[in-house]
Image 1 (spheres, rainbow, N blue to C red):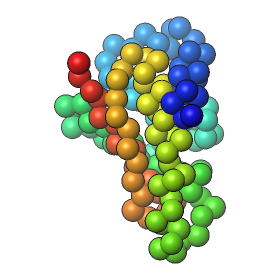
Image 2: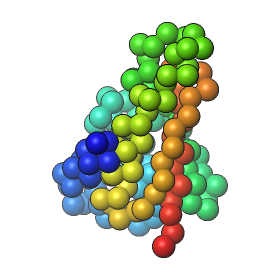
Image 3: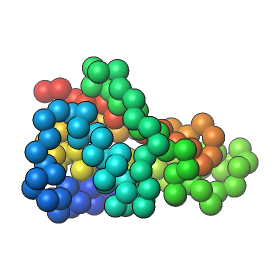
Image 4: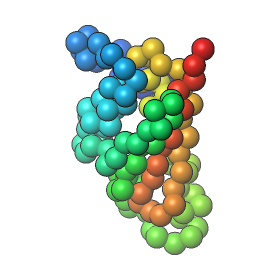
Length: 120
């Protein structure tokens, strides 16, 4: 479901925003503009190994902010990230980038999304 929503968001973007030259520019767009449109805040950090792997980090992810801080909540948190992984993957797909997106939570409400670009 998140993938389809991400595709729809990508299709509604102004055409001038879709003229990215590099993958890094696309990921910066996701961290600033897309994240701001969906969650009313920017992603906290973007890191890359310059070989097609990007780590997007949000220290107070809105869908996890209201969860408690116990261990049982930490175990359940990844279920709340599946939609967002699909959202990122769907938007990247619309922008012409095939990717694999995974999420991890080490401490609530922070989370990391790892985007691996799949080369064809």
